[in-house]
Length: 246
Image 1 (spheres, rainbow, N blue to C red):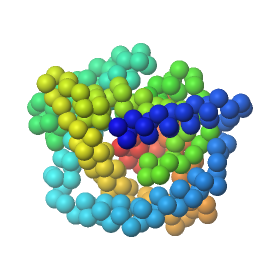
Image 2: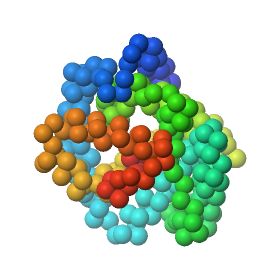
Image 3: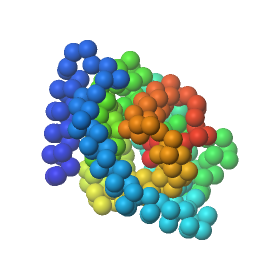
Image 4: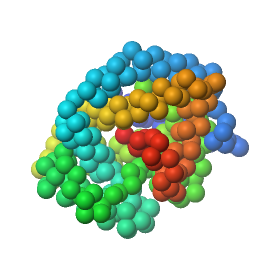
């Protein structure tokens, strides 16, 4: 119930932002507020997320890799409907085949045999789908905990919760193919994915903090470029930063 109220409020806010005239991605909706939220997010990262991520890195490699494979496999579920909506049938096949193989042969996704047979699906979401339709990002702002976003991607974030099969059986608490869950399952998986992403980018984050004159602007630039690359299905910078979809 709380999630639905939050989604409605966020949807209304983003609708107003998109309705604003001459809004560009390089413009801020409310930079002062976003910078304050960014400081909060960085404090949360320093106090909680980074220490947990460093501890996660100390786990035996098979456990760490298996956990990353598991959360990635679940995230790929969202790519299936979005690839279809984009008319990208090749990616639809890769995503569908990857989920089926990894969920069965790969023991619920803890192993990744799909990659060994050449299935490497791009992570797709509604924000990327809207971008592929030519819808601009709108203005940029920062959300508590969730981090950088744009007006378009915030709309996409809400829509994701309705078309994502995993969200369907957890957040929406509906049954699909005899499988059901709850919101705790959803946030547990998403939280684990965030820790896995943070643990893979310890060095990158440290380097960015040390070398950035304005850390807020640096994160903004990285986010906007990453989203643009993902809409174009570009692999630029993939080796420098782990998948930001997690």
